[in-house]
View: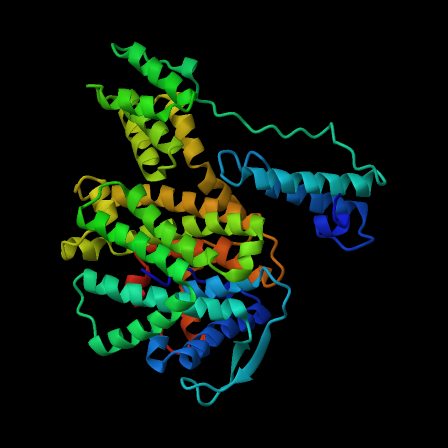
Length: 205
Length: 288
């Protein structure tokens, strides 16, 4: 059972269709599965989105809160895959095994295979980066994939994964810009902050 | 390591600015009345954010009055009263304040023994109220210090320890224990906020740490190779990643009041701080 659909969408009772649609669009964007892909809170976002969809259906289709076949938000799949490697060096077989292990989320074996290799080429750094990323080690993940890109700048797969790793930051930047972030406002902020706050005690300025 | 989570003040509305100051001065006054005047100096904006965030989960109206205070004799300032989230934040500040004091000693700065003793007593009071939280904070910090002493190269490992500290601080609030969704989201928010604070502090201290030959996770992460430009560039990607994760968790919270202030801190304030520190105009340059 859903809550008050107006409340769910954050609009007043008796809001116009346009207002409802506008609020609905914003919330879909807010809880979109693409945004929460790989995030530990993805299930919560999905629940919120479903609630929003149901509320919207009630308000636009006069009370039927059934499933919404027109709206299937499947999570975007990572473009990285075992078969997509363009690598064809002497370690191709081992690298392929590592990729398959990473795909199964068999992180232990992927790590063992990487450690036991002699090579430290771009592919090695790339797969080490993917491994770190899957372990939730963002710093190592970004650093290693960056290293792979530095060694093989033209590799489209490395570029795409590097972008994916930075996607959370890009989403944030966009939303922050929409909220009115002005990158050149620093000078004004420096001047204002000190004279305006009633700093009770601790700040030296 | 404390004081980076601040609002982008020029972008606050006048009313929001008043409420923000009300929380700040409320926290300051509560520190004075609950503990001792001398402890007020450990007040930090991070704890103001903690108080506003936790208070925003309830409908309770902010009770803000205009009062004089020790620091401002002439003009009256807005002061928030009777807010459980504020009281909780004071206790957390005491526990963290003492830990920061220990951290300074750890870093080789000579502590002032008089302030040290008072902090220690205030901390004991707070610890008795929240034994589990303070235990988690202590064990995570202990692990962090051990890693730093051993010259740990993995920035992820050290940053995660500080993330654990913040997670304990943000999720120990009593009313949160019955709010499953909110607790999960705040736990992820706090964890990423802690990692962001740890890393931004490392960028901020980069030059000083090289000069004083002290541990800095960014330098060690690069195997002792000191190329500030490269380190800062990598830190930028990572800092923005943490900001993204913070905002995703924040977007799932059911904020009942002061949403404008919280939006400002999350989407403008901490980004402002990030960009300022990245171009070398952080807290260390302005004085903490």
